[in-house]
Length: 96
Image 1 (tube, rainbow, N blue to C red):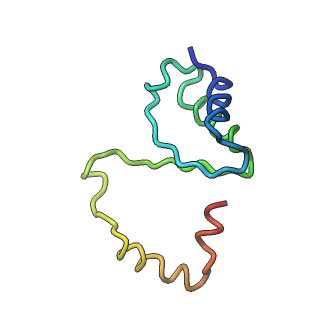
Image 2: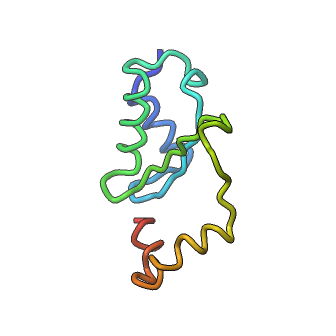
Image 3: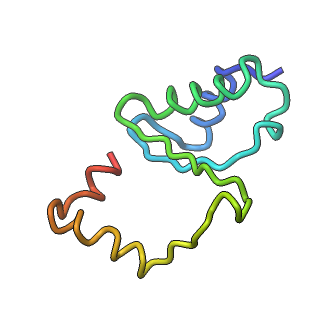
């Protein structure tokens, strides 16, 4: 059985520190049985980076039906242009 504290300790051993920004893509089943389930894993990630850190988790299903269109870099620039014209530091603020 895996406990939240085990995950926090393991993340620290991997080099995750308070204040870090981390992108997480994982399979809950790869942990084995986690006491507290997915909530415990999320809490462990949040504890590992602390209140100043950021945990990012993609919410992809892998199903084309759930993603009706593909957003490429050119389209993203068009979408972001008005935002960045108003706030050129948008990305910096989001990364904190």
